[in-house]
Length: 78
Image 1 (cartoon, rainbow, N blue to C red):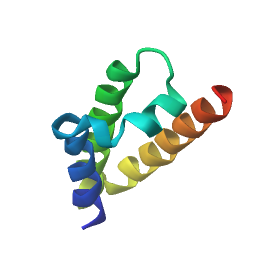
Image 2 (cartoon, rainbow, N blue to C red):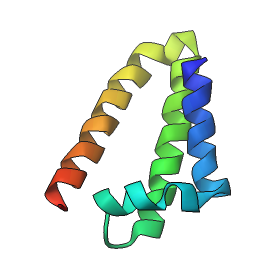
Image 3 (cartoon, rainbow, N blue to C red):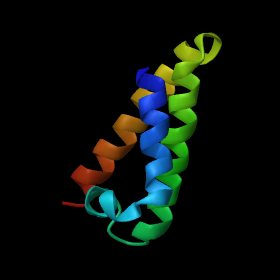
Image 4 (spheres, rainbow, N blue to C red):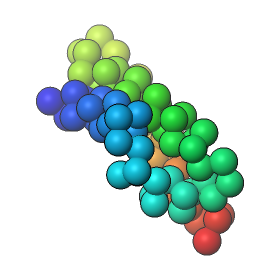
């Protein structure tokens, strides 16, 4: 279920981008719209990967990397 929730959040980046603009801008202050789409695509793909038992481990590793990628960008752009 968590994977599907993450995938749904990823899709929501495209349907209601304004919901994610603030947090995306904190990590990516320039070209925020482009990174909003990139993040939505990554979250959708990772969520679907977590939802499928055969790809879950790899997707969880990817999710850790994605979390680090976001955190580093937020810290760097303070």
